Image 1 (tube, rainbow, N blue to C red):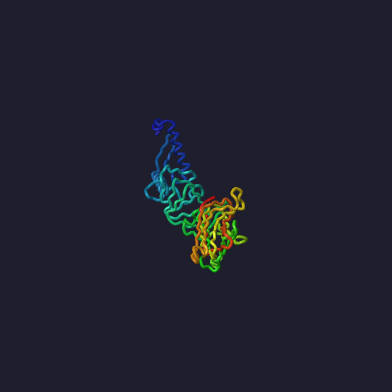
Image 2: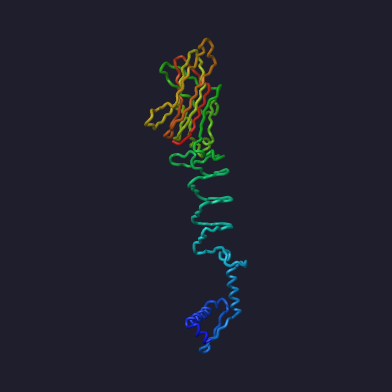
Length: 353
């Protein structure tokens, strides 16, 4: 052994001595000493404890293969519930499969996200590009504005049967009067240039033959006060358009002359804006005129019982909230008189201002 150490040199002797000391200081606490050394004068006798070595190897291999599947140092050998790796893990483009649950309290960033089953988002979802829904979409909370106003309010409809119900502009209000209703509006003629009478717009549920219809979007806001159409009967009949925007109207009037004098009838659909500073107030959106013959025209009895229809439609813009739409009727000359037998006026909000 002396010749052996002379051959290895002093550095090797030091290394071996440290190894022995290390073995004694550390591993001895976990297992028996593997390397034994006896010093006798200038001679050192070393030998291995085979049983201790085998025990150390067995315990090391068991620690590297805790599930005993023959593969060393897999994820299930290293990670356990509640384990904290203490470092960030970079998978370098490799995939992770078979995760039962994934919990994150920080930011989750990915190129794409594909969920094969349900997803529940407790708070806000921001979509930077677009949202594509292959099937039905159900909303149980607030839906941002089919009819959002300048303060970007949130509105909820009582029924959301489909995405179509939340289209930006699909609100329509219609007021109509049936022919043969109990009450008939009569307008008497006056001398030129004539005076106007306001067409009656009622929402009486049919008591006097007047009815109203609303589209679902206009009929079911969370607060009925949010409907964009309000029928006003005093002091003059008109429809208040509570929300600014682009509107369309369509009107048809059935009129009948009840006298022997031919009547020249003009129907004007007007827009009134209390805040208007540019257009003339009140401005006429559309005007229709018709000669409604009296009962003596073309010989006695020719015009008896005949009705005339005046029809009109137009798009217009309301640049303020609470503008009005109204219908004025002028009948010439004095002595003539007509009855409004039936009528229908529908107004739709079709675009943003």
